[in-house]
View 1: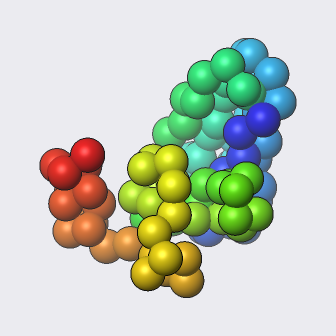
View 2: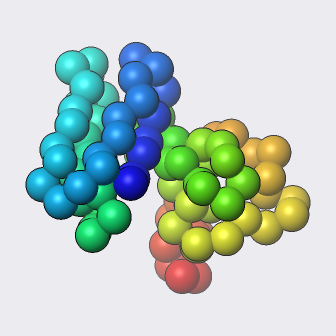
Length: 92
């Protein structure tokens, strides 16, 4: 199962199986698909989306969730600026 939360409208979207597409109706247009088989998601502003981390049982910003693990100093972080996102992508 894949799960994300749109911070713009507070909607939680879950994709349980392949081709299980869900989206919110707000202006951020957040969507998720793929269940456990793959993760496909999109939105207008990635800083307004959090991703569920099953290991720590909470929603995390994209830049933390994509690394597959949570660093100790990042556990309490809830938002990430565009500069942080750029840095994380470049250093992946």
